[in-house]
Image (cartoon, rainbow, N blue to C red; front, side, top):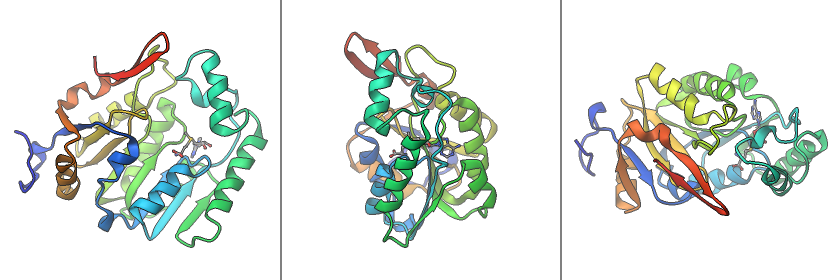
Length: 261
Ligand SMILES: C[S@@+](CC[C@H](N)C(=O)[O-])C[C@H]1O[C@@H](n2cnc3c(N)ncnc32)[C@H](O)[C@@H]1O
């Protein structure tokens, strides 16, 4: 049965919305009044962190990133092919991802960006280290965009979910398969494993550009504010959650698009 604004949201009526727009267009529909504590795992130079701060206006924004060089230049970008990788790394990080100086610069940019904002706490540590120190049921939103390998995303999901308040949200960035199905880029597969093992969680919405941000919440949480805002946006299509794991990037020559087929 489909959900509609004003209806109660018992577990069996939760459905998945595909949202037509960017990740920030989607996240702008989160209820700002209940976003007081936010964590971002994987910060880079703080672009998304800045958006979270400006638009969701939390009391505390906890940023987690070791800012540590990767073992090889293409490690974080294994979902791209061939020469695309190098170009993307240069544009995105401002240097090779296997050099520590690149990550030191990104850390310094983030530190300088938030130097005068007492709401922001920066942890130059791994996701695992910070999760171990954090109390359970303290966070409204946990944005996961760190190491994108299957093993790391699984680790993030299972370590961070207990930190969520009951009505809180996990958001997974880059929830999309690459065309060649690289085993390393494992967000989709990790989410599948997580949802099978934690049936109390449900995928709520996925945006159809920017490589897909997926919002997950507890079935027992009250998500009426988010669902109402999404329905009223006129930018959603209801899709069966069974096809969630089919979401992937398709390519033909210079053309690239996202598809559920
Ligand atoms: C795609 S970037 C994050 C971009 C950022 N969320 C944004 O949208 O502006 C990925 C980041 O994850 C970080 N990272 C890698 N492994 C990590 C780990 N174990 N814990 C936390 N962050 C990690 C990398 O250092 C890198 O800065």
